Length: 74
Image 1 (cartoon, one colour):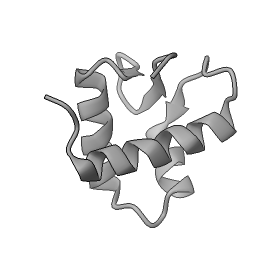
Image 2 (cartoon, helix red, strand yellow):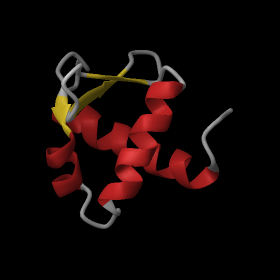
Image 3 (cartoon, helix red, strand yellow):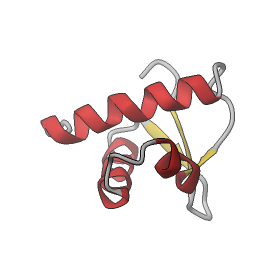
Image 4 (cartoon, helix red, strand yellow):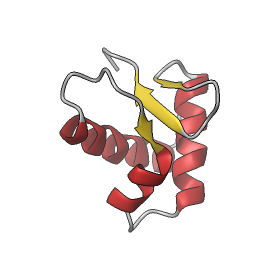
């Protein structure tokens, strides 16, 4: 099931921030760092959006949790 409109909007902001942080999309970014860079978005919504993105194959998370990166070509 595709992301709802709110998660899609947040995902766009997440990928924009990540792209500025790591242009070659090769490093894992801390979710805490992401929350600091997007203070206008509720951290719970960020976590929900990342979980949805991971379920759809748009994001990869570390095994330990707490870090992520968008999957290339998404």
